[in-house]
Image (cartoon, rainbow, N blue to C red; front, side, top):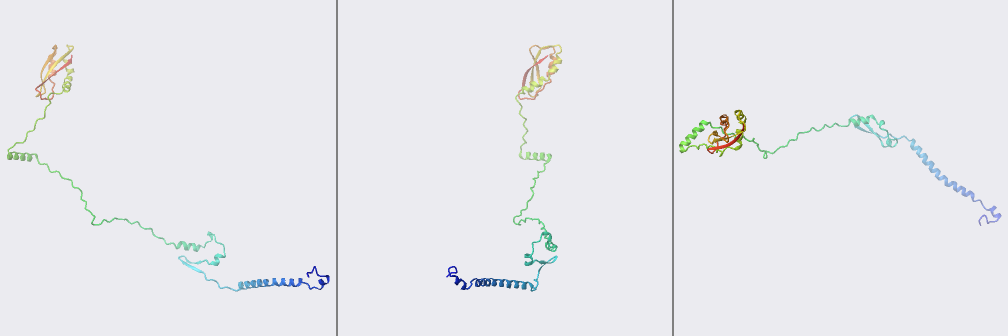
Length: 245
């Protein structure tokens, strides 16, 4: 029966259960403590055993041998700042650079095959034939004329106009106005003169008056007879021109 339902005498006679439970609990803690103590002693003993130093690796550079950091050293310390870098490593890095000379620019020339090359000759200026002297030419023409029995064609005269232009005649007569005015100092009014020009020479052939003849007619006739025009095809040409006296 459980202890609460057992009679009073039975509780006194029953053996105590707390002592075995306490012993069992103490035994359960002893095992782990022994294992932990064993591991601790093993770690202390391993730490006290001297270890052989690990060989370091060196890199051969122009500045000398530079040690390479081991894995244990790297894992066991904080990364160093740039100012703490070994000067020898920097010197080794700087001296290990090889200066490469810059390429010299080469002049590229294009080669043309001999088959495609053409010789370019400068254009020649045609030389004019030397002129034949006039004397030799005339002698040669005479010989040809005698041989062929023909004469060289004569130069034709240029064709003349049928009559002189009215503008040229008027201009020439108007130019004598001042001279005619000096001749007629005592006359007044207008004197009309009629002139006849010869076609072969262009000179004044005759002078006459239209209307009243002025007193200074001889002086005026002498002045207008000096007018000349270009020769023309007709035999004569007449013109009437008024002068203010």
